Image (cartoon, rainbow, N blue to C red; front, side, top):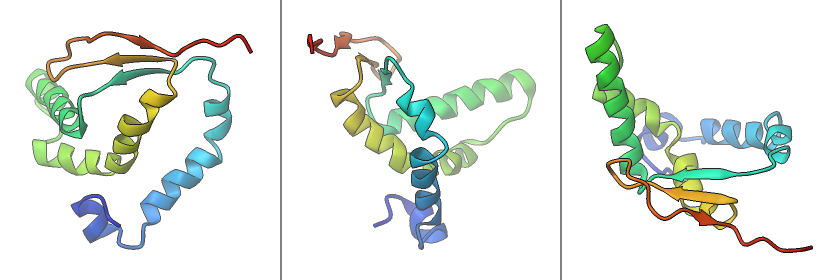
Length: 118
């Protein structure tokens, strides 16, 4: 089922979702498989990701006079919401290093994967 209004209204057939999954399983697979170490900067939740991206764009607008509005950023980020939510839920269980961040970008206790001597 759709995860947000963008999927519900503009991608009812799931074309974008399938495209992303195909790319991750195809052209991007060698990149992912060749990774020696996975480090996750763990946002508190999807709302923080959206807020941080809007903050970044506001700074760009202030500096250059151009950039996306908050609404444009929200629409853009919704394209990646499904993947982001999946990674926030799944990646901490297999990343080699997880660095939790709070809403203000403060760093929490870094977690390292347990090493085995296999």
